[in-house]
Image (tube, rainbow, N blue to C red; front, side, top):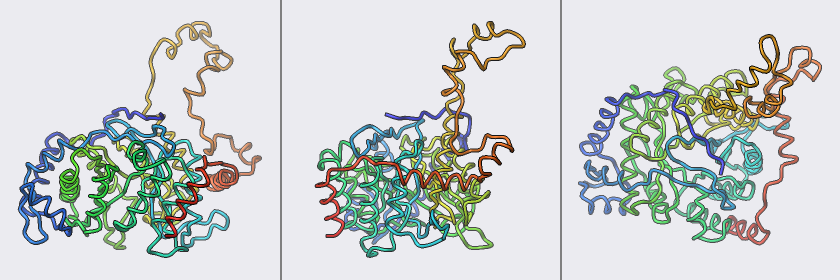
Length: 474
């Protein structure tokens, strides 16, 4: 199994005293202000457990939060579609994947900004299947060429038929998730195998501020019952659906997550639950939600720290940009967020390849993030110190004024010691010019096309493919 352990390089947004203040502020919100729950089943679960329920409003006591945290697992182990261990969602291990449900894409052939279609989701899944540093896949597009009420089903089909990697999926309602569950069971050999593999994870959201819609809760409770991992991640917006001050928005987002956890654990104690979320700001000049703002990184990493405080696996975001094209702004914002999320120790880090404030997908941007993730992982791996890496005998043999280029020790170790990127330019000007003077964007575009033309995904048996497609069309 491929696993990445994150070293603690000292990045922390919250002090021990602030942890306590945020925690008790969260409990105060839940018990005194409450949350609206638009699910009769969930309200009944809360009431029977001791919460005060008045109409749609539920006031959740601290004891229920404590009990839910005690029951939720601190680790979630995820396999790929074929049953091989792929991700260990636990403290210190980080995995990266794409975002989901973009309205538009940049066409890799024409460069045109256009609506996403199902083939774009297929292409993104194939690309991610081939890229070494992409660990899981989300649907990079809302398929505009299928019936809108079937879009999530078609998107899941496109992913599960075109990558072996774990899938984080979205669904509109309970009917969607039931069909996706059926398709995933077919892909891995039945319901029991699916429970064992856990190769799918639902991405689900409360509605900020402090609302749990009937659809969100239906999906949450379904996953609890089936013991399928579920992310319940608020998307609070500073100054709009949350306070403009990060502290209040973080406490509110935490209250939304933990109230979801309480309902989830009341339905099935010990079922796998993944916390997380973020609070990007509304830009007060443009009234848009900024994906590239430092406040987004600040609140995301703060919620990662809170999840660590509670010993919960955590979902967060990186590799995204407000830039409308794949340009220098995109590279700056994507690289910065990839590093910050890695340093913070998020488990599932999604949104690589997002442009245009989360509305547009770029396959070239995914390839940039793949290299960026490799750089972050090399940094977090740190310096290994042992007799072989110290190489004192080699230093003695070379001596003052020598060089190490022809030494056998260099030949044996350079591939592991020095990261070798595939697309970043490390040529001098003359050689770069003679090789075509290609920009990074042009090299990334070529790489995407090469992968789509040549990469072969491990295919499911024809009979299973037909049965999965039959569910899509049913």
